[in-house]
Image 1 (spheres, one colour):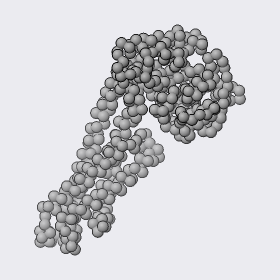
Image 2 (spheres, one colour):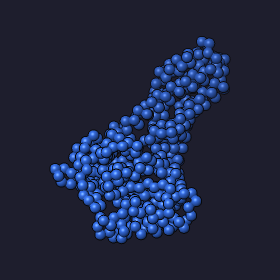
Image 3 (cartoon, rainbow, N blue to C red):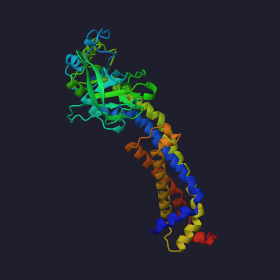
Length: 410
């Protein structure tokens, strides 16, 4: 306890040096978190479907699935999940997104709206960021249709019930829909558009929805709920997983079948997964040198600053020795000193990252606090503490209390 109290007194005595160290360490922690988050944010949207991407299967998209391919002439020709998947070779698992002809009504008039539905497998695997409310619950039985809405100009919010006009296959109808959640602005959503960048990786499945840019709200529904109400849903995109021993000929034949239903693009999951892994490697190679440089700078600066500080503290160490502290124990004063400084820097860094929206520079960045950022922060802290201990240990080892007392350092 006495060593900790002594370390706190040391912090107060060398205030300018400590402020410099504090700022340097706080900035290092934030920079490392930003770099790690920049890599992990790309993996975040791959992870929910990683087991499917690494299996035998097909990813496919539809401009409009119809009996005449892409040249459909009426809604009666549009096809949904149940019209297409039975023709495939016994898929093991399917994640699908669907277009829905659904228009909220205000004063008995349809208002423009993007409407999609997600099947149960997708709902279970992925939950987008919500500003309020809840995501769909598959186990919940509710006679009323539920929907998740984007930001909108109509005042729709969680708990509201709105009339929605469904232009269905065979009938038109108006159904009351309860809003159970509201999407975070600019959140990533699977399957709402076909996001091709030429890389053909897992990023294709996700797009950001920004109401300020679109000027049209978005409604998301549960596929199974709409199906229970006989609402037609046109297949938009799908990840189709097959059993492990499915051969390449079966996949190729099913790709042809999918193309005959109006799919302008499909790719084997093995190829998509390979492209995705390569993409992640490139991201790591891009950010890893920056992380290493930050770690090296942290080590060098901590060694340099503590070297100056430890040399100045020889006077203090001599006093501690005269007062009864063992000579080698003087290094522990520096250990506690570094720990306290490191913990204070970590707390401030976490607070700054917690309130990034209010900080102009950090507000433009996404910082994920997950296991990998925690590991990165621990690595920075260990680097700082080890670096802070090197010079004091060397100086103490190369000097004795007798030498210091003889030189008159105290």
